[in-house]
Image (cartoon, rainbow, N blue to C red):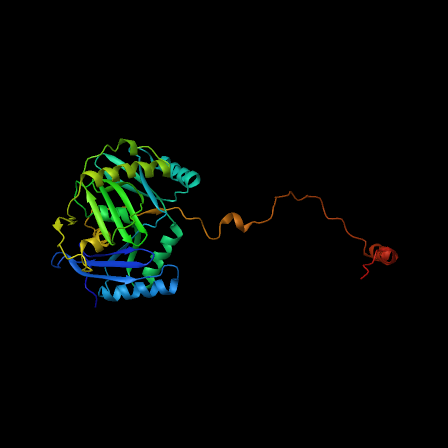
Length: 333
């Protein structure tokens, strides 16, 4: 019989194209960490990916706690939009415009004191749903996915303003954050750096220019300027805060280390309900069988006459058919 799941119990998984990193946290575990594991994965093949999720679940002790996936492909982008005071219809219109004009079909609402932000996320929503389905088929429970910058922002220090995550070879991103909520995030080149790793800074920045929606080029340039300043002015030791508890300093090569499991830990904190009420990512997915495609021919409603039908003279009709039969053109082969 499985143990009851209570607040503080959860599973977090960082998903990349070549690696799965997962942790299981429990309220009664020393330092909250119950288990951690890394499993190689090939996300291009469903069968191989399913096997990887199955093996990860076995390594984590076949958990029955809620599970959260954290992923952020190299083509993904995230930026915030101020929606303080906007009504429901206004939000629906904003989401529709983001989808139609900018190809952004995923959003999540984040409250920050008196301010309310809409985190606009551009990623492959269908691929993300596919990862959720594979994890559920592997036995994980209550699976939900979110962008990795959201996950890792939960477990860095509260005054952190910038982070850079090296996931795997050729897979890195950086993000500007405020009060543990992402402001902007996108891929970054980290050539020559070892992975996995996580850089975090607490330098102060003016975030006002991130309030308006920006093109990818402008957003990348703005975050790059912050990265250059961080690299030139500030370096610090990585520290993670797991719901008020400082995460142990495991060696870098240990699969439990903060450098390896920071994103998975943030996802687990969200799954365990330790980060407050977390709203799910809203994905506007097009239907595989749209209603519009059910009617592939033009049609119309035509009024039917209320006059009585004309009775056909069977004898006359038959005679005319016999008379004109030899006059009809014949198909020649």
